[in-house]
Length: 398
Image (tube, rainbow, N blue to C red; front, side):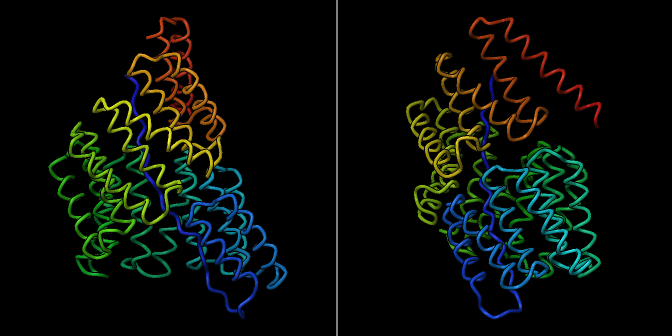
């Protein structure tokens, strides 16, 4: 049976680094970039960010910290657009300049973390781990072992290990981060809730549901109390708890949480933001499991329209929604409608990630199931053979 892909919205904040210079055109442009980015208008944000980079060089010189910040902004926007090679190049420029300026400082550690996060998204886990560890080590050296910035690095590494099912490595990092946050901020703080969520994810993945559920709930309670019920972080916690119920097939519990998350994002971000599309797609997946096919199709198609408009037709999030819409059609026996969606999804993933990413193998496995249900046994076997080759090559590399 083909699996539905669930999408987690990642709210990234474009870096806005203070510079020791009088207010100039660069800083004015940077504010515009931040506003456009928060609105989900990534193409326009990228255009303005490139102008800001040029202005920063003219106003402040090519070796100024503001230039590194401008490269970072460009890298973050490219990442959000699914343009990973361009993002990597921009992040590397920022890191190189910051190392020239500072050798080791907070900004250098942040640049290392940005590259680690990007490599994790790309499925390049060894490089993600390498840069994540370097960022952690630098922060420990600069600020001491109990600084909240160290906890951020610990949580990021834990998320990387969780994604690879390396739970025994992830759990102690999340526990240490949680202890740091509690010591720094007290028991009820937004960062405490974030670490609790990381731990809950690890517990859930290990089948420790009795430990995971109360931790997800506690994280949600803290965020509601500290941030208010209409905050985007509350929507994220609602989605996290909904994912938990979804994975246990408790769809009646997941549905209202996904609906609340969608409502919060619409109110905070507007109806056409990419993270609203993510929430729509997640809700659609619950409707599909409940057999509410018309509702599911409507939500998937609405999500797809937003993603194609805001992110472009070749973004990985578009591929995920295409895949999920294809799964919906398979469930209804509409195989001919599903096939081109799977094929387009696969093409996007191959273009974005290369031939050996997890998304490639997952999509190919879904296509093999589809071909078999359509009576195309030879095509199914060919696809399965390709999956086997990818897994063998991946194993040899590791």
